Image 1 (cartoon, rainbow, N blue to C red):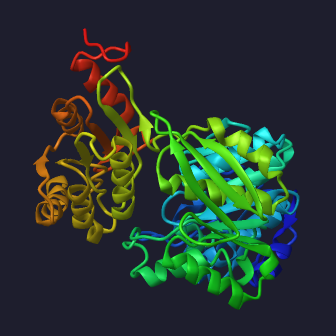
Image 2 (cartoon, one colour):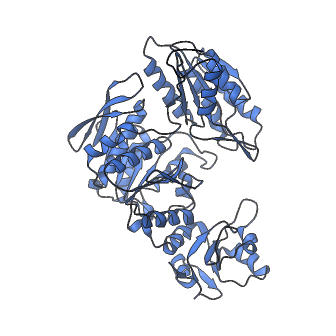
Image 3 (cartoon, one colour):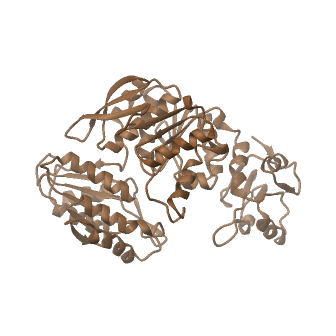
Length: 508
């Protein structure tokens, strides 16, 4: 769609400098990737202002703030400019207008929370596809349309990319979009202009305190999905932690009709309740779920009470948009989520798992799940753990402590050190592990591959080892460069190096 600069300025409460009748049909933040008919959003950066790159783009017009306009005018810029006070506060609305407000014609299901967003999104995708809908997915592992990958980078893409994706999905016949909505996306306005048919909240635990100064501010960012102009039209909230109860209170205060709100729990009475009936040797669980006073049983092909909570949340979200519950549950029985409690089997006589857990509560949860799988008389547990650089440093010792308190053997190693000194990050994680109330053996290995080797060498028949932190990721960010590294691949390599084959229980 072509929209005039004047229309966009009026929508954004800004002013036009130049010809307001010029039309644009695209928008974006990357000065070098925009076509001639686009609007370039020149945002202020941490080091330089995006307006300095306006000369690199063939875009037809520019959106910027007061500081950006000064830069543009001093450089002799002659293209039309929309000047606004806060670019991010209006960019979503502008992008939605340019790309035709596609979410008015799509059923968009949003999931926020600290843990479980990706798993819940995969459960939703599988159940909706089985129910016969055409499904788009946007999240941590990328973007897909009916399981076919679409290149993107961020968990929740920037507003222009997101609105363009919605338009593409609509054009390709998608009916339902399942998306993870990060706290960054909510705080930075990336989802502004999006109509959410229903929003889900999974839980809250310490993460991203490098971006959100306190847990209260982190929670407030998540709550944006349920209040104000951005609020979803319905809500499903897991109340297994206190934050969920507080989120329900917020929804009530906002005046969302309570018939449009459901609560879910594995531990207490709720509109959607679920609990384990029994488990299989593979870790799959048979679950009983109650929704709208009806009982359902289904097979959940992944271990852990937290995954029962994720399944309950997904089922409630699907029911909120009119999907038949029995059909939906049939669809999730064979779902697989990359890097989430993902077993690596080369015929070894112990359990080997890769998981994305990268915050203290998640580490505790996956270790409890492994312990439950091993049983009361089961073997020992080893864990490979690290922490990311240039991120919340306060959680590093907590990561180490959670690992030591739940495992018998801890190998502290590098995650994505980024521009920090890896040794200092490891030291903080190791300090937490060594000071924990635990008898676990703690070791440090700078090489992540060597750390995985150490865990495999340590394991005996009946034990379990888990490599946490990177999950589905296939790169390790050291400095400013990304090097290929896949935990699943490396764990398989280490098992094969020890002599295991794909024939169960045998060695070469």
